[in-house]
Length: 177
Image 1 (cartoon, one colour):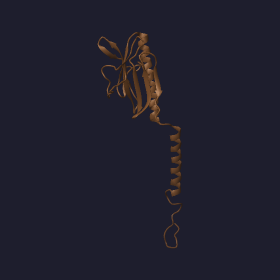
Image 2 (cartoon, rainbow, N blue to C red; image 1 turned 30 degrees about the vertical axis):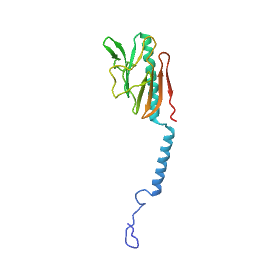
Image 3 (cartoon, rainbow, N blue to C red; image 1 turned 30 degrees about the horizontal axis):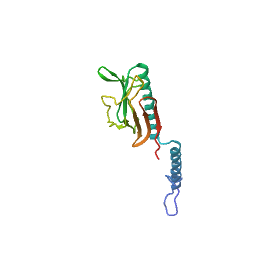
Image 4 (cartoon, rainbow, N blue to C red; image 1 turned 90 degrees about the horizontal axis):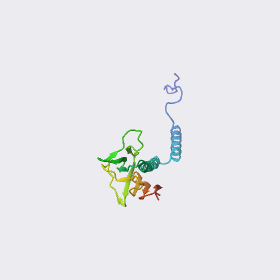
């Protein structure tokens, strides 16, 4: 191994490790990629709430359609993060079977998405578990209990689903501003 004038041995090749410039270049590249991802993908929580609002709207429409087609009233039980559908039988409210083939089976909402509800203008207190009796109903005659459901992402209301005694169930975006 070669020796310097002071008698120390010189290492062959470049020193081990990264230079400050190399580390800064890597950090700049990672920051640029992260910034691009934030611009490409909008708020995933908001998209999740949009999807849940569309799903709940579709399920409510299906429940009311099924009530009219079968001649049997359909009840809808709500909790803050879940909903269940069922028929009214001689023994009271009978939830739909839990089988995966049943479209109106009990449903859990996506993470950080919840519901708030008003029936006939009165706020419902939705708990963590489903009540024994449904709060909403689609009647076989085509009528329904008037309601307003708000779909929230975290604490922020994003969508409102509403129905009068007859007619369609509407879904509209709530402006955040």
